[in-house]
Amino acid sequence: MKLWGGRFSKEIDRQMEAFNASIQFDWRMWAADIRGSIAYARALERAGLVSADERDALIRGLEEVAWEFESGEFVFLPSDEDIHTAVERRLRERVGAVADKLHTGRSRNDQVATDLRLYLLDEIPTLRRSLTDLQKAIVDRAEEHLEVLMPGYTHLQHAQPVRFSHWLMSFFWAFARDQDRLRDMERRVAVLPLGAGALAGHSLGIDRRYLADQLGFGAISENSIDAVSDRDFVAEFLFWAALLQVHLSRLAEDLILWSSAEFGFVEVDEAYATGSSLMPQKRNPDSLELMRGKAGRLIGHLTGLLTTLKGLPTGYNKDLQEDKEPLFDAVDTLRLALPVAAGVVRTLKVYPERMAAALDDGMLATDLADYLVRRGVPFRQSHSLVGLAVRRAGELGLPLRALPLPEFQAISPAFGPDLYEIFDHRRSVEARSSEGGTALASLREQIALARKVLKDGC
Image (cartoon, rainbow, N blue to C red; front, side, top):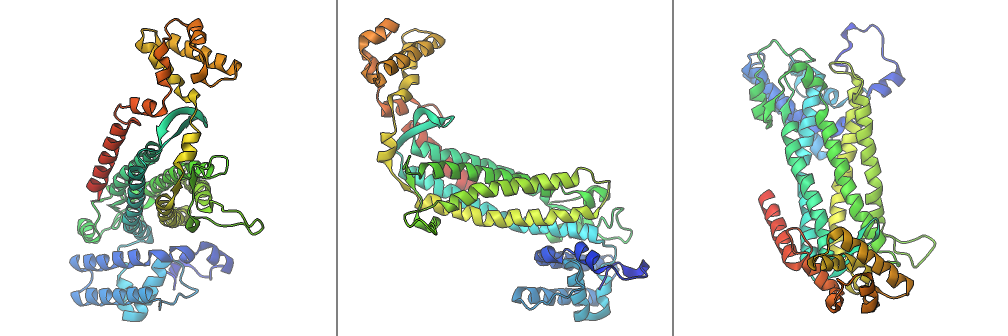
């Protein structure tokens, strides 16, 4: 069954037919397609284009086709070019010639744009819940390990001591931004293209606002040409997915590194690890490596779609068929990656003693500079003076706390005997009591705020 063959005098080439078909991937929009068609049947009756009996027959037939999909009994035919063709073909087999009236005033251009938006609107809540579940896992584990100190890093070098929970909570806020972007994006997805026709609108009195209400859209497209050619919402979703996967990748990278023997800070649970086919002793953090690897995949989807869109002339073009596979794959990837990430976090074994053993005196150099600031030394000078002390301790092969007081005072008389009180990592951490800091009180406030964010967002 072809929806477009009237003006053609010869059959389409078999290879061209396969090249043109999208049924092999757009079949998954069957529920959206049927839902949109049921609403459209009602709109046709309201416009006087079908009778009430015809409307009921169309709706009954569409519901029967939906049941076939749900039960796994729907059979695709080689002639089914896309999901729209397949549904309409089976509808005609079910209800007869009245099925031919369903497409009145409708183009596959506005139909597919509507289906894709409906599909995405159906998927967004699942992704939001999975992301929320990951955030809850982060907050729970952060609260569990409030007293664990570890090295904080910049440039992958020892920087300052922080709480392990503070590091973990940094990802909560990255994911919170992802939640905000998803909520904001959802409003732009929920714009109805149906009723735009091929590109010029319709002349048959279809009530588009009625359709929007029936399908749960918050707005209708304001321009029929833009309605059928707009794929901003797909590009925006792919950006969102790629950035979220980048955040997952960064979480994964830290945990991969810290689960190595050289660090030994954490251990990935066996449920989220695999072994080696050659080396019996191996426990590989493959869950995390795949999480890191799939970031490249989702970034590629975004780049590919933007490249497809960049040179298109106005209106619908078949190039837009390339929007679906990256979108579907991004959804599938995140539907797996987010629960796995939450599982890794929930089951992660933490080794506080290994983290504590990695703390060193050099990480307290900033505290020593702050000590001089409190004694009236300008920070630029105190930074330089502490740098000289660090160098001198290195020359003598001593940890900074073991450098004798005369050596400190040879560098600056501002160093007093009480400077050695600085060499306490927990004291350093507790000094960072500003909002958002790593001190215990600040961290408790941060966790309380995170729990409020989760509660308000649910």
